[in-house]
Image (tube, rainbow, N blue to C red; front, side, top):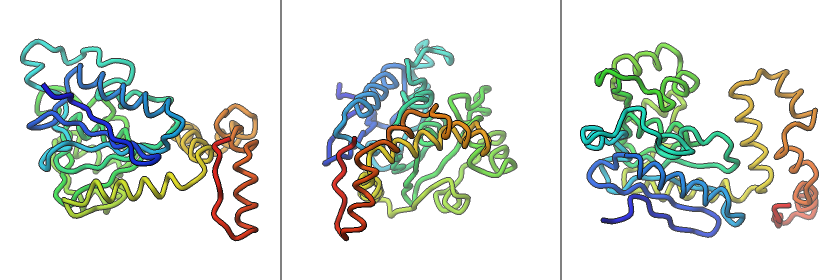
Length: 261
């Protein structure tokens, strides 16, 4: 049997592919494999951005593996330290991940995409959370993240009906960053990743840290946390050689040379 998760390095960008034909469904073993890929990416100092996609051209992921469920895998099974799909509860990561949604993102597959920092979607992609039709709810992040990203009535409709949202509609609501021709979605996501990777790595870490804080903190509290020295990534960015290099390179009209320190 082939590995359900493969990785390929392209300079400072890691391409992670979930490849479980036919629907890239996710069982416990696949969640653990995905988390290992995300954790290895997090720990590798040479990697700055990851792109996550699905194998094939029909499914990004159909979510929870219902065949595994029928074989006895419980709905509340332990999917490991990153939660379902290895990412939905991986809260303390510091590097950006882009989901390249190449097809249907259903249930936990949609929740996996929602756990990423940005989404590039194929024009044929569709998103849905059909859990209520199975007698459960989208509790691997869907019920928590979707209302923060869409107007509450739209999110509630999706959560309560399971209806599908096409890529163009998702883009119109700001849920998706870019829509690509179906065959170009990974290339376009990799190009976006290269744009991100061109920034100073400690600045990227600081953006990730502060935007994660902003999901739960108000603006005043966020300022207090930044100014009080409680955010290590932000403090490391302020004190870095790269912070000096950026202004120096600008003054000298040259490209900066980031050292990550």
